[in-house]
Image (cartoon, rainbow, N blue to C red):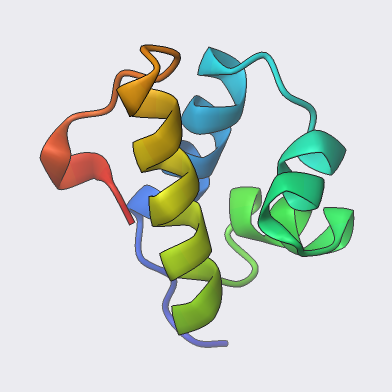
Length: 76
């Protein structure tokens, strides 16, 4: 089993909780499956390069409208 960056599970969950989104809602926003978001949160996999870019763009949009508060270092 490959090593998963320790911040990904808590980061993804934190994003969802701040936005009051289910795993399914976040998956839909990012264009991935519910199972993918679930695996990220459980530390079973990490976002691909494309998914990280989508997650970063989504977070930036949410930050710009004041819906998300993440430290710079905490993003994807």
